[in-house]
Amino acid sequence: MLFEVWRTGGGASAISLGACWKGKNFRCVASHGPPKGGIPNFFVRGSLFKLPFVFIAFCGNLVFMQKVLTAEQMREVDRLTTERFGIPSILLMENAAHAAARVVIERLGGDVVGKAILVLCGKGNNGGDGAAVARILRQAGAETDVILFGKVEDTKGDARANFQTTETIANCFNEIESLEEWDKWFAGARQDWLVVIDAIFGTGLDRPVYDWLAHIISQINIADDARHDGAGRRLAISIDIPSGLNADLAEPIGETFHADITVTFTAPKSGNVLPPASRFNGKLVVADIGSPQELIDTVDSGVFLAIRDDAVDWLTDAKYTPGSYKNKRGHALIIAGSKNYTGAAVLCGDSAIRSGTGLVTLAVPEGSRESVVARISPEVMVRGISETKTGSAAEKAVNEVGKILCNVDVVAVGSGLSSQEQETSNFIRRIVEDRKTPVVIDADGLTALSPFSISGSEELPLILTPHEGEFMRLLGSDDKSLIKDRVSAVRDFAVKHHVILVLKGERVLVGEPGGDVAVIPTGNPGLGKAGNGDTLTGIITGFTAQAVQMKLDMFETAVAAVYVAGMAGDIAESKWGKRVMTASDVRECFVEVFEELGERESEKVKE
Image (cartoon, rainbow, N blue to C red):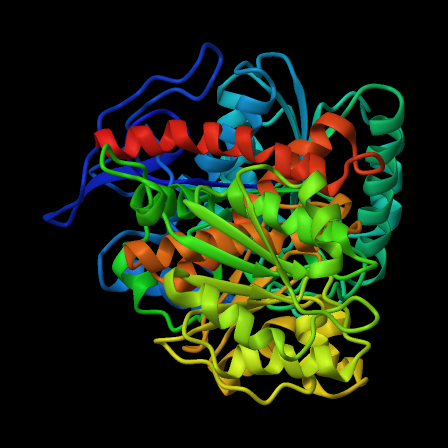
């Protein structure tokens, strides 16, 4: 799991604020003391903050799908937080610092007393965050070494205030303006830091890091990698975004800090969540530092990061009740398999029946029926349909499928069907064009419909699940530059064809006809093996059948299904490793996913 959200509420996982400022009342929350050796609760007084009082408390609660903001949008939210709501910018910086310090303390076992920490700071506000983190950790008992790449006298505003304070209390505070100065300091410095904090560049960076600082970032990366491999693990933490990344781009622009954890504030940015830039972030923590939610709600983003509670929320809406029985849980019809690809049908059907849907019918070419029945879960009903001479679905099978459709809530078509014969392609096209239910299209179904020219609708939605090669065929092009910006490509296709598009790959994207795109943070490269696409199609189909019966949103349904499938993949990876895990292993891990999410589902129901 590579993503967390910290927000105000109950518990003890994040930082919020309450303040009285110029006669305005802000929300105050109950104080929860930190673990021994952690950050003390306190009132801040005096010239640094110029506040009558500030109350910092530790509290946390997960929230729902996160908007992904640009750097400019984030700056506007920060500006309006201060101008419209009277929350001083230095208080936001202080809250950000406490959020980052909290992560450090928790990762070091709740106690930083006597532990060495190196904090690397630039001259801007990101560096000011770093200086404040160093001060907080020093007050908690850590031995903090602070490097400012520049002079305190050249810094401004809130950052300067924090540098001036931290300079007086850090164990070591050095101003460095050249590679020669760095080399001299580094050669004589202690090397036993347990944590290196990157606060050099924040979300304002829009060009590659210049030469000598790029060399230093590279040196730190190499040193940290060596520690990972041998002399004890050193934790690398970035503030807001790893230095070297452009916050608005998925592609790295130069030398970049390699973080194990990135603590970003208020909302994630593209560079935090979209690959390959996301690889440099490590685990992402999004901390609420006090900007009013209404400001974020007004931002026109269109890109969202799915989180755990999106799946929990969907499961809560689709929960089993005392009156639940098979006909109320949805009936999924899966048309899959052919003479040479019976396994795809089995994987898809088994995944669907494990999704919580009430009924699953699997329609396969008649010649494959016995092979499928011998391996499929006995709860799945298997029907044989007419086949071609080569053992794939025949066009006349459309009428046979029509007789099954009277009590079906969703149809899935494509997994293992084979697209080599025109007759099978005609069958697929007729199933989709003459649909009476939502249709999930995968694999050979996508190939048969390429280039894609069919339109979905709100009443009869289409859910397409291509990998990048299949997506290129849907677009009718081999020009890979068309999907270089994956978010835009998914959005444009979903809007143009009025479909829900699930683009598989590193960080699956789910687009919908209104233009919103969700980034799914679960999953790992082990899911790239054969059969996992069929497993994904099965759970999407099963969830869709339930959504039809319970009148749930189809976009949210697809997001929840993909999130759950990725989470199952992550559990499978933790058990068997990427090399060994199979699609069947992933399906079996649904049990643990639903058990884990079900605990939270029960908590939400009680609330």
